[in-house]
Amino acid sequence: MTKKKELDSRKRALLCINASLEKKAKDLVILNVKEISAFADYFIICSGTSDRQVRAIADAIQEKLKPAEILPLGVEGATAGQWVLMDYDDVIIHIFLETIRSFYDLERLWSEAPRMLVPNETISLKALTRGM
Image (cartoon, one colour):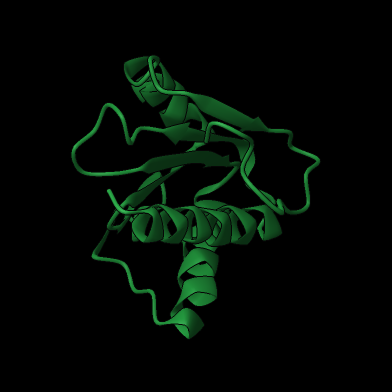
C-alpha cells in the first residue's frame, strides 16, 4: 500500500467519523483492519438509538463526503435503518440499531484488529490515534 493511499483512507475515515459524531452516534469504534484484511483499511462501527437516527447518520456521512467527490461504492440497509453498511472502498462503515449491534458483535469477530474507542461525549476528532 502506498503512503498516499494510507493518507487517503485516514482522511476518509475521519470525515466519516466526524459526520457520525455530528448526528450523535453512540459507542463509536474504529478498527484498523489493514494488516488483517485484503479489502479495507478501516471499519467504523457505531450505533443509533432509533432507526431514524441510524438513517440520519448514514445520510450525514454521504453529505459530508459528497463535496469532496467521495461517493460510496455501495450502501445497504438504509431503508430499514437497523444495520446500514456503507462501502467507501478502504473504509467500511457499519451503523447499527443498538440491539442489532449486540447480536452481530462485529468487534468480537475482528478482535485481533487494533481499535480506537471514541467516548460518547466526543464532538469531533482531529486525528486518529497512533497505530491507527
